[in-house]
Structure formats: C-alpha cells, structure tokens
Image 1 (tube, chains in turn orange, blue):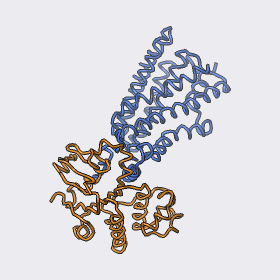
Image 2 (cartoon, chains in turn yellow, brown):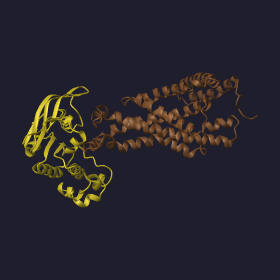
Image 3 (cartoon, one colour):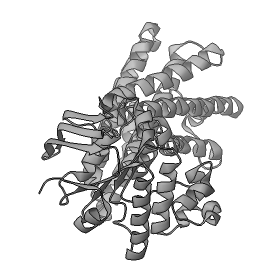
Image 4 (cartoon, chains in turn orange, brown):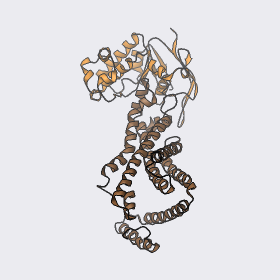
Length: 197
Length: 262
C-alpha cells in the first residue's frame, strides 16, 4: 500500500517563533503510526494538519497523494476523523452523540449498549473516550487521528482503550496516534515517527 | 398649563446642578472616588446635549434634508463604541456598522412603510437614536459573547468540526446563546414596562403635556420598535461574527484557538 499522508517541508508558526520547521515524513495507509516526541514539539499541531483543523504556514500536507487543501474540507474531515485528547461529550444521550446504529458501535468500542440511553456527560472519563471513538467511527472514516487518546485515563481503562485502538488498525483503518509515551508507541504501533528532540 | 415644554430656562438647568452637587458630596463622604467622573460626565452631557440641540434646531427648522446625515453620524459614533468593545473579533468595526445600519434602516423602514410614524425629522431622529443606541448594546454583547464562548469552548467547537460539521453547525449553540443574551435586556424591559419604570419616550410626552393614552401608545410603538431593532442587530452581528471567527475552510481562526495557550 502507498502513503496515506505525507508532510512535505512543513512549517507552522506560533506566537513566539516556529512550532514546526521544515518537517517531512510519510504515513503509510496500513496499520498504526505513532507520533512521539517531547511536549511542545508540535505533535498535536502535526495531527491537526491532517484534517485541516489547522493549515501549515509553509510546505504542504498530502492525503492520498494530493494536497489536503484540494479536497472538500468537510469530506476530508469525515474521511479522516480526529479525536482530541480530552473526550468531549455533546449534550444529550450517548445514542444522540453516536447517531444511528449506536448500539452496534458501542459494542465495537467495548461499551455496554445499555449505555445508549444515558446522558453522555454522566459517563466516566474512560467511557466518554470510547464513546468519542464510536462517534468518530459512525462517520465511516478511512483514518483515525488520535491525540493522546489515553492520557486522561487510569491504567485499567488505558489498557482497554489501547487494545481497542490496535484492533481498529487491524481492521484496516489508517490510525495516526500522537503520544508522549515511548513505551506505548513501541508496544502498540507498527511504526514510530519521532518529532523534535 | 402644567406641562414642562418650553418652561425650563437656563436658570432652571443651573439650579438642577444642586443635585449634581449632592452626588459629588455623597461620593466624597463615602469615598467612592467618583467626584472627577461625575464632573466630567456632567460637563460632557452638557456639551453633547447642547450640540445635538443646535443640530436638531437646525434640522427641524426647515432643513429636514439633513436627517440622514444626523442618523449616519449617530451610527458612526455607535460603531466606534461597539467596534472598540468587540475589537477581539477581526473586522469588529465592519460588523458594527453593518449591524447598526440594518437595525436602523430595517426598523425605521418598517415604521415608515406601515405609516406608523410620519417621514419627518421630528420622528426619524429621536426614534432612530433610540434604535441605534439599543442596537449598539446588542451588537457589543453578541460580538463579545460569541468571541468569549467560542474561545472558552474551542475543544467542543473543534470536536464538532472534526466530525465534518460546518462552522455554522459547530458554533450553533453558542451562536444561539449570544443572540439570546443580546436580546434578553430589551425583552425583559418590555415585560416590566410601566411596572418598574416609566420609560423615556412616555415620560417625555407626559412632561410635555400629552395625554397618558397617547403617551402609552407611543411607548408601545417604541418598545416594539426596539424589540425589532435589537433582533435585526443580533441577527446581523451573530451571522457576521461567526463568519469572522472561522476561516472559509471551517477552521477556528488562530486568535480564538490560542486563547489560554491552546
């Protein structure tokens, strides 16, 4: 399989100088790619460039060989679903958050389908993170962009979510995961992309 | 005659300064440190009212063609105030001028088209000034509230965007809250009108010797007019502010995303 994403000489400026400067890398379509690096290295920014929550100040980002800016941005975001570091349940029930076929998706992410009727803001942090994954999967994406998906979780929910992420990659989704934990990257990912140092 | 129209002399104005003196004394006694502000406010109100008095005398004295100019000057001044209040929103002054112009033109337009008020400077200027000053507050409120809320809730907004929603969809609940917030004051004062306070237009007519029944009819028109004017302002400001806080590609602008080190 070819590259799903490619960064070409990407620069992103912050308020006090560049966050990322002249960064180039490729992310293959298959499996799980972990992006690791110290905090402040611009890992989250790199992830946000992939679904155009942000655009680079220099260089380009390619999706399936074409500059991301040439796609319809709403379609690009549907295809490459981004799940942020902190789970953000929307007001309403779990079912309303996830959408049609909520129970099937809840099972897929390891949640009890009986939770469908519960208020989303009454879920535990770990449950909310899984629900956000189910909500992303409901859009039938080709890629999942995960920003520190386990950093807010306790160790037992963390192991479960890690296994879930691995199984999603095994199902054929392109998974790009930002993490500050080298251990997690090495254990979980098919390849590791190091940023900054 | 018991009415006050034409009865207030400059000597009466000077006498009324006694009450300004009272507020200065209270401020000093209670160490409120407002003496200087009170004097500045008194002087400014004197100068501003004197100036508008001359302008109105001139316009009402057969120079009605200047009415649009007076209204434009009011819109201009209100734009500067509202634009400065919302200056964290890019293009705040443009948003303010659009909002205030639509509010004034839309509301006065309806009143004139329906023949509720005559197309005369004596009606257009005071009514226009009420619409503009109320719409100014609404414009400032909607702009700053939307900017603050989208900044504070940027994670939620971006979670919506990430699912493939448009900027309008992603900001809908905060947009709604800002519009509501902008209109609430006038809705509340419309609810309690006559119970808590006799509002300005009505008071003015009563003092000028009009019958209570004609005073309340005018006041009703004024309240409904202000509801309409504020609705126009909230609508235009909300729509344009959302347009400025997101890029054409449905991204939150960086200035909003980087609130508090995001």
